[in-house]
Length: 196
Image (cartoon, rainbow, N blue to C red; front, top):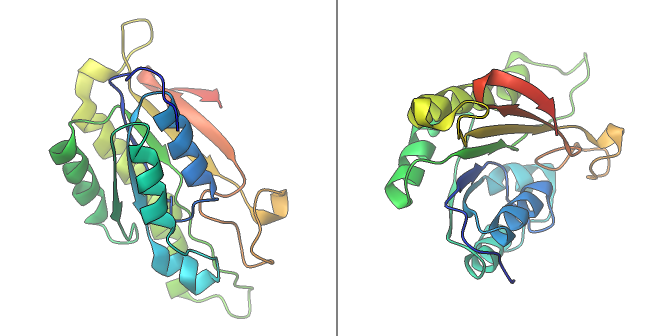
């Protein structure tokens, strides 16, 4: 893996359990452009959903480290304490991140006949609460030094979402791989949304 000059950026990417997933592709693109990458993975989800994991996180980490500083950690984003644990780990490793890619997705097929509060709570915890709380804590930690159009602000939040039925993922009808169908929305400094 050949890389460009280091950028000084530190990126956090959630949901990169498989070497052929969207999260892994995002990590590679960032590392190839000289960005330090800290990614999370949660292989119990992939195993439960029937996605092949193999040596995914370890292989991806090794690949990224040949291009840029890289680190990884297993993280269950359904747990409220996961957000501060993640950002504390990134700061202890290399410093305050200035790029956040919310890519992790939980998906379990459940029709109206077998939908339970537990299934719904897990979807909400990972797909709604985790990215919102992670984005808020990320912005708080970055503070004023990282935001603002035209003022040299470097902070970026990207949310990736989608679904298998939108043509973005496989899984034999079992749901999208983490990261979904590859659509995203970037929020630049100052909270101005822009299509990605």
